[in-house]
Amino acid sequence: MNEIRITRPDDWHVHLRDGAALAAVLPATARQFARAIVMPNLRPPITTAALAQAYRERILAALPEGANFTPLMTMYLTDNTPVEEIRRARDAGVVALKLYPAGATTNSDAGVSDIRKTYRTLEAMQREGLLLLVHGEVTDPEVDVFDREAVFIDRVMRPLRKDFPELKVVFEHITTLEAAQYVAESDRFTAATLTPQHLLYNRNAIFTGGLRPHYYCLPVLKREQHRLALIQAATSGSNKFFLGTDSAPHASVLKENSVCGAGCYTAMSALELYAEAFEAMGALDKLEGFASFHGPDFYGLPRNTDTVLLRQEKWSLPESVPFGEALIKPLRGGESLGWKFIG
Ligand code: DOR
Ligand code: ZN
Image (cartoon, rainbow, N blue to C red; front, side, top):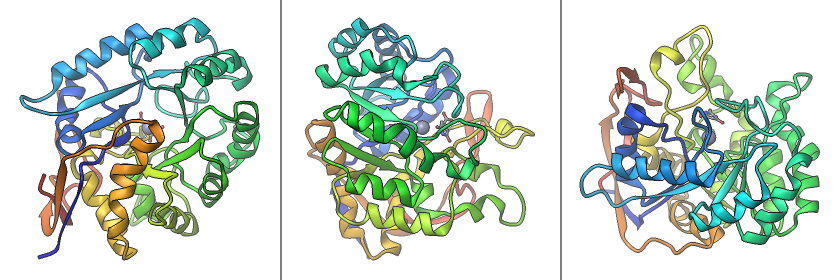
């Protein structure tokens, strides 16, 4: 029997939502991961240290009995985040701020309209040791949707890195060859997260036999050459790349709709999907570094000490699961998977 045992991983990018949705999805993340970086794009967004603290309390209250899980809180950067809020954030245990270019994705209307407006806040973050997590897409309607990440590197990332060389920046859920190369060549203050869907699929997945809304996320899946660059980066052993599922649940009625929300729900089989992607490269020996070491090392946090077991075993992911009053369809729901998280 084929099994692998690795140090318990963390999810360095997840959407846990709030209320009944939070209660529905949190157990899946807490089952596989010891910690997770929790995205702040609620409605209204988590823009202050006090809101982040209250959200952390709601997450802790929604945890199943006996769960051993620590949410790592983030704050939503706006054009007007006060400089003084950064000290309060640090004191409240907030570890990072998330930069959403205004209008780039789900609940991002309060995001940053021009990064120069945030420079005094970024200076404070660099000083206080808070990380900047970046949704790296321009929102310029003139730029083709599939080019928005590559254009972001030149228009925003390079100037940002030059102006704040010691700010730790995570280029979140990268989807292109250009981003993988940029991160690989950057210094130790820049890293990237990779989602399971961007390691496993190219953009054909969205259009196979019809329009498949559950494969639609942002940044959108790209061509095969990009997927190959991403899986090579993930399995290279480089400590600049680590696990961030971007598990982003939306009720299935809102995915199977004339306007489909962006996001793939992967929390129920996250490690299994990563194992599948790494196995296809013959690189299962690189999974532990990617899933369990590179993230905490970059964030300056201790590595976990317990372990989890993954077994090569066929099982079927349910087609849908309850999501408050609604249903949610996990990515690959109703299909069989070749790896199983045993715990
Ligand atoms: O696909 C995505 N879903 N990308 C994001 O950036 C946001 C996320 C969400 O919150 O649903
Ligand atoms: Zn996300």
